[in-house]
Length: 162
Image 1 (cartoon, rainbow, N blue to C red):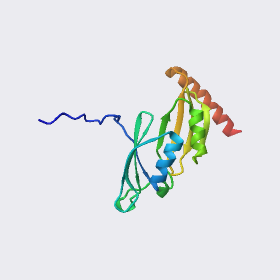
Image 2: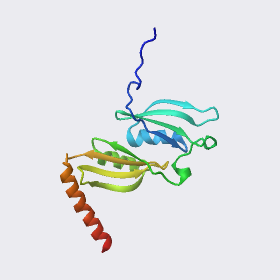
Image 3: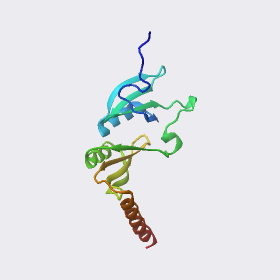
Image 4: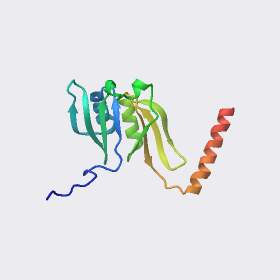
């Protein structure tokens, strides 16, 4: 009789992002330096490139692979951008954010204390993927969050009109 197997492998969560990247090998090196990723495994394709890789960042897994355009598998640089943002909660967002920028990520949104209680900012990695980084600093009730959001949006609209 076969031993039962967990439907979700050990060390994984229900959702695992899977990125397609032009030059996945360089991306793996970047994620190690910028986000402290640990390379769990890498399978090279028969013609070179990374067919599949697994990284661990904090307590979460990330899959990635090189582009294989002939199979319809393309990354954000081939499309001219991405509609997806990967969100990373960390213990010290300033350190992590500054390290990502120092490693070559482009500033998309500077770090700020946000109305929902996080210190938050965004970068675009050298491979076209957008990352938001945050440290949760304050628990905010839904009512207080709505009040702060309205105040923040009012200030933004006033500034845009000026």
